[in-house]
Length: 195
Ligand code: ITT
Image (cartoon, rainbow, N blue to C red; front, side, top):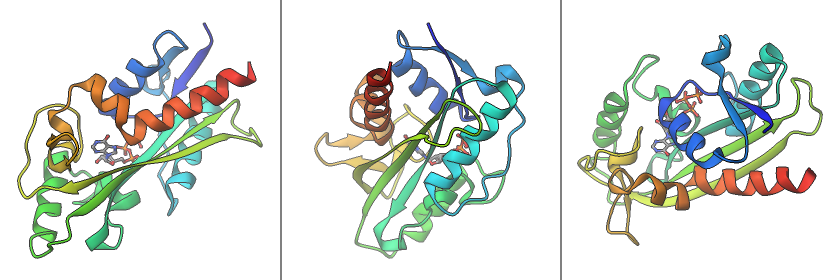
């Protein structure tokens, strides 16, 4: 099976992506290859995903998959967006970020939000034609966290069609419908069609 590097240091992403790539690729985490992370200096998900993919591919000399994602809240003009992981500061935990979001949303009745995921695949660090997919997952923000599964903002991301938060979904169900699940499926379809 072909080797592929996962250019992420986020354990939640690693779990979800591993589950979906199983059987297709021999997946290696960038941390297992001692990849040194670089700052995400882009202002868009696409820029940051490319920065991470090219960095890991440069250091490992292997094809690489990167995911840049985040939560965009309508009433906050798209915030926290690319800053989702660092919303409450550089070393913020998921709980710190959720607390800040709940506070900032206190006065807002418009609870609409979506997750965005950009998935990038590069064959090499200087691949001139990366495969790029962008997908969204629509939902609403809760006023209190519920559920234990997933990671990040899942406990406050409510799915009206399912009547629960994304942290209450079974992992397989989340992968079936999430921004990341949709993006990876689309990307895989493209990669397998090149082979
Ligand atoms: P890497 O850059 O190493 O991949 P990161 O956590 O810094 O890890 P991002 O810059 O892409 O990754 O930030 C994504 C953040 O968006 C993540 O930390 C969560 O707070 C949030 N997020 C993304 N996908 C999510 C999901 O499926 N469920 C909940 N929160 C999610």
